[in-house]
Image (cartoon, rainbow, N blue to C red; front, side, top):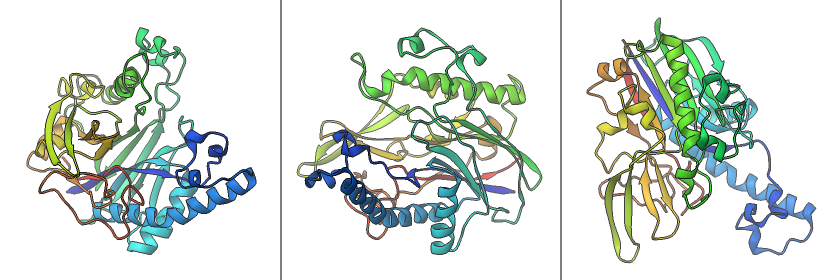
Length: 370
């Protein structure tokens, strides 16, 4: 029996407009910065028109990327609410590519912008096995005190013991796939913020993500029993906003590019991997071909890295030892620099940096369940 599982950060699947750019230039879109808009009412009209005009191309590409993943279950990040998910699934996935998802789940989490994690599932797998939700739980209300995870590093960031651990949520689903138990944990960890006290955004926010990964692990151990998780069927999926390795992109469009792989000394994700608690199955791919996002801030800071993960329990990893995950990169904008041999045909109307399916790539894997 097989299950095709995917994860994808769809980037700001919203049902609302953000008008704060009129008073905060840092939040104003580059298009409107070209015009002298002095009246806030006119600004709001222009901003709404800009967003609506750009959204259709973007969501067509998002739908194409999901269709190419062709998953039985897909875990999503950055979904505004169920209304947004319903409108996207029916108006794009179903109407446009003729293959939608009847089962959709979203519980409002902690994100200040209102973007949540969600799951879409078919009623059956591709080989006809029923996909049944037994239970769903949000862990958005868990605090540092609840799990005993508060420490000096978090205090230095201005956090408190009774603050919530997850900046979005850890959504837990107990499923039966053709009668076989399967547990799914969907997360979107704390984003990398700006530089703080001499540390770059990744390292300055790492204590928060480390607490989140420790909490995910605690939730799974509470579910199955500490020391008894290895033989269970479970996966952790989502945007981890951290990486254990990266590929530096060196050069410019004029000089050409070369690619250098390097391991990171530390990562919040070490909590998952250091003792084999779960396996990052992306490591089965070539070292230059594991990335799901291109990061650039000028020619001196550009690299490819994996932010999007399917972590498998040891039992599932062993049962699928000969399988590798797929990465759907056709929705990447043209600014993304591909290593030699990895180039793909982009979706129609893809732009230099927008429109695009997302800066993230869907990750998908076909799994044999025990």
